[in-house]
Image (cartoon, rainbow, N blue to C red; front, side, top):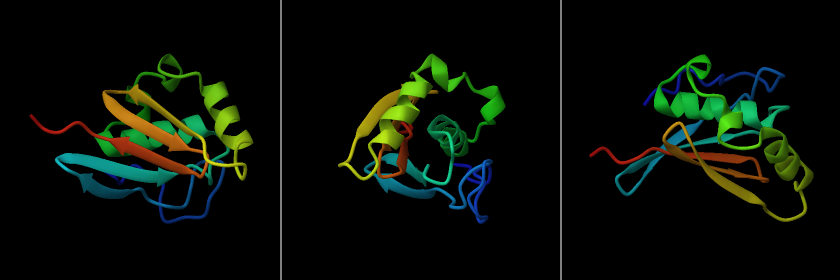
Amino acid sequence: MATDEWPGDRPATDEGPGDRPANDTAGDEAVVRGDWTGWRNVGAAVATAVAAATGSEVTDMEPLAYSVDTDALDALLTDSRGEGSVTVSFRYEGVDVRVTSDGEIRVRLPADE
């Protein structure tokens, strides 16, 4: 699982967060976690986290907007910060993605068969 594509180990900017996603396992499935709070756009953070988890280039992936309304995702999660937790889950590029208003991005890769 490649994580070197995540723009880590630097301060948060328009280009992305400073934190590298953390990898762990849940049963037989790999999970990559990231934080979108350093990004101005939740969708860009999600696409970058999925690319890092799957070893893909963001530019080679289908646009995130084909899987979820990115404007609604951004508005729902950013407008909900501090007012309880909101979680949005969806499939993108063959993986399960969960994003919370607390800033967590969780990418669950399918178990190898």
